[in-house]
Length: 186
Image 1 (tube, rainbow, N blue to C red):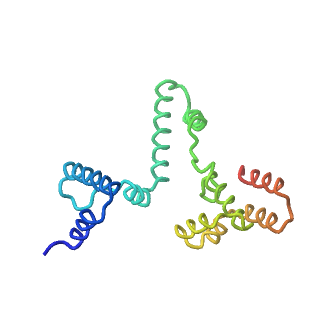
Image 2 (cartoon, rainbow, N blue to C red):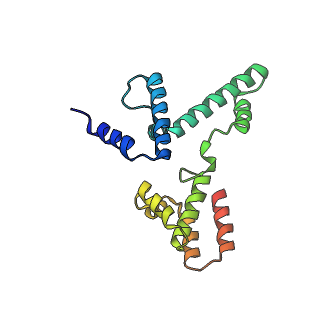
């Protein structure tokens, strides 16, 4: 028995395609032939978007960055020891620390990178003031569920207090921006 999907596809191509559609089908056939030649008869071809998403969810980027930072710092310490053997361990560590800070979380707040936190604050304020586009809210909810609650819980206490004052009208936007900027520096 013939594959119903194949029969349906052939029916569409032979009986209902216009000139534009035939060109699209021809291009798709050529592409598929190339894929089969490259990958053989693998039923599912690599999907870069899907692979990237799967890898990023499985890949501990923070761990990789920590490891990379440790390796670079260790390398710098070895070079300093070779080039300046007269320095003490404390002096070497201090020198390496000025070049490659040991604490990668210096630009983080509650474990959240500062750039991400700024974006979260902006989205939260935009949503709270009714300025957020429905599409953006929908996309965030699709990705994270009740994202406003998750954002609120992840904000450091000082940020929450500043946001609350701003949303209640206790401070103006300019003052809000200044206070948030200062809070992010800590």
